[in-house]
Length: 179
Length: 179
Length: 179
Image (tube, rainbow over all chains, first blue to last red; front, side):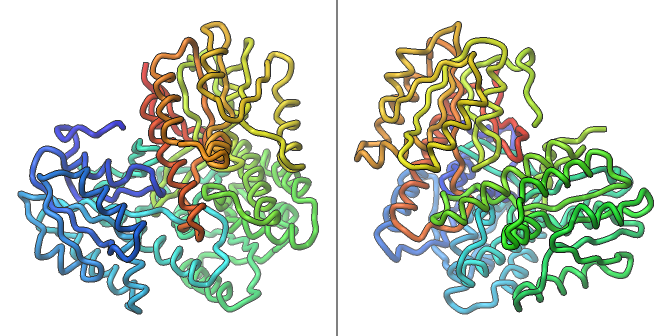
């Protein structure tokens, strides 16, 4: 897979958008290649499929990475861990949103808190998120709610990030790249 | 959300494509900021969810906008309202197509009529439409039919419009921008 | 629909990605306009819908095209037919993957074989494939498996192709275009 050279792309606040298996995580990891980095996982290994995926990702990242898991209090975790010397990769906003909704939280309020943090973070933060609204209208109210929340969350985070990239088949399209 | 400056983008015949909650309507409205405009709504408030969405959109647009509702006879409504002095925003082709199919109309014939009009409109027309073909194959024949009709309609309208924009997370990718 | 001029785009190894009814096949055919070409169909007419689609595509291509059908042994068929004088259009990788999975084959191994061939093909090969991961998470394990395999296959083929194009409403976005 093509990789952005860490010498050409400064790790600024970045949203990496894309579909399932579009290479989002690998691209985000490659963006932070070359130094220490913190992996902030929002996923929880609740079943075998998920557990397998988490182990696969962890093996790929290797020993340069510190891994922290935080399913709900993402903004507080970012406040603790963001640092100019060690970029943070949040993987991913879709699982975070799913966790918030399952826990009955006000996802819009949590999204507002995250965006407030991202407006002036203590260090580079790269966030991975899924685009989920490009199929037919979901048949369930829950499905439509999730899709709507995800779309609004992506818009808000994209508005505050300095760089937004859409991944397709592992290749990036730059939607925004502010100096 | 980033907005196109009305001074840099001329309101020519424009198709605004994207997924659900990708910021299509807000971007299209911003494109027409700064003067009077007509909002041609194809949606009908058949249930609470839809009613809520329509009221939300109407509140956001504000008093510069005249709103007209037309679920089926879109081309006739465009012929009545298109004007060099007041751009028209059609929101959206997906609901129009859904209405046509529910009414048992020949959607391809209606699409042909629309494209004939768009080839030489009396004033700027901006059309919002959903991309719905980027998930798995729908399980029902109706779902596949709708997806196929939507895809063909988007291709036809995109071919006739001078500008085509794909929205993701509120940010535009220009697929076409003819002078 | 806009067409790439065959005089400006050299027919190198190309992946044409997009959703259902996004104009992928028509764009790929137009890329190979102007000379003899071989159409390598992976689809099988197992039902009326599919049969209709195949006949529609065949009529559109016209007599310049030779058609070969190969549902499973795609790489072997490419090895037989690839030639500097006659480009091959593979339509499409999504049906090929579906056929492989239905036949109980190891799709990852078949993908590896295809990519090995594509690294040094005997002539231009253009491959059409669907992006299927931009909706909500599929409800069935089979759906998620297919989506994951398709995403991985697209990434692998995209990495080896010299040109990768994403189609939306019949219009191309170039993700990669190496000389």
